[in-house]
Image 1: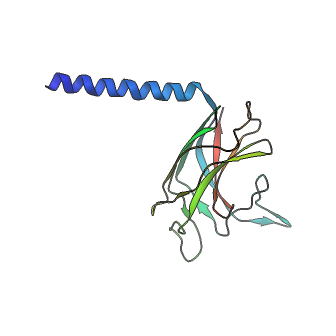
Image 2 (image 1 turned 180 degrees about the vertical axis):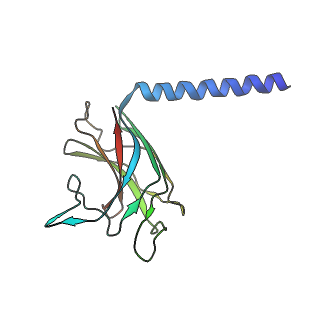
Amino acid sequence: MRKTLNLLVVAVALVELAAVDTWAAESLVRFDGGIGSTPLSAGPASNVVRGVSPGGQPWVIRDLKAAVRVDGSIKVDGRGLLLAGGNTIGGNGNQSVRAVLFCGNLAQQSALVPLEANGDFRIDDVLTPTPPNPCSSPVLLIVSGGDRWFAAGIPVD
């Protein structure tokens, strides 16, 4: 019985590893790590990224990992996206977020997902429209339903 259970565990692990390898082989862009938004202004310029304004309060993110396939499939795992200022500091602001991938000035987006109480979120969706291949100068923003950016992904070469 124990031997059968061990073989089953190994088989499941091999299937999961093959799925990850397939995902990486078809990867268009990847992001590892995240940067929270700070709605600062330096003179007349505010912290606008690719035409998207930041949220009204500062936001922090503990971790962000994302991968986009050439067919537009996207997986994002975000941890600890929380307010870093205001009266509801440390909360999720009852927000829902989406991923927006910019390839140059072209934007593709996912559907909205709610933030968990601790700021965690997962996106498993297909971007619309399909991103161009190659994706030049990629930028990944995590934005609210009101299209304000709360976090950005750090691109992986």
